[in-house]
View: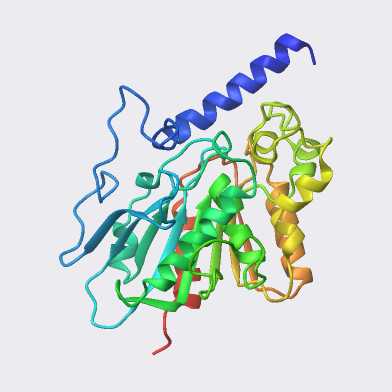
Length: 317
């Protein structure tokens, strides 16, 4: 491939990410790009919050921390403590915002939803991002009584880079790895994970990319920027950042969804995670969206995710 062709491929792939996730692609603090209105506060710009919803926005989960170490929390009206879905946004580890996800479907199903921001790779390299996600989970457990959350029923859902981070939450949960800072008396484990098209083994991404797909083993590749060096030249750093490194039989159940025409994160990445979880005896389901690329919208996948969370987070009657 010529230099000119390689540049065109990378630029096209980058454009695809930006178009799919425009509210994710903000500045250093996660703002929407200039000239594009941000989603309506509290509802993702998609309808009214159910009556009685309690909203706590921009809550810092690290005292005196980085501006991105905040979360938004939406709690439905309920007498009993409610299960929680923790959403982690995508954006190539270098963009995105907690305001992108619509909480209304979760609220209507009786879940609280927390949408988490985290430091980008230009702010701090790995493991800052998973350290932030774990700090957010611990903060949510520490404040479970205050916000009427059931600390035994936390699920996590993430897309793309967020899929990677929720997979890390699931596979390294209960180990103490990447737990540091405040609220260490509380667990950062989650009870169910939904991973949408997240990378799981960085070293295998380029070997299984589509013919015109993104090349990751470059200094400017999202995963290279995350670990602070090109992938093939830093295998130890890559191994530490791979969710499959931490898979054991103690991992929570997983639901994985991925398009088989994804030009940014090869479908093979989800196949690898599914195989590792199955080998460890962990309940896992991989749903392949035929013909879909990155950042798909698929009603069947979402229905399967809904059933998955209901199975593992709702109390049996």
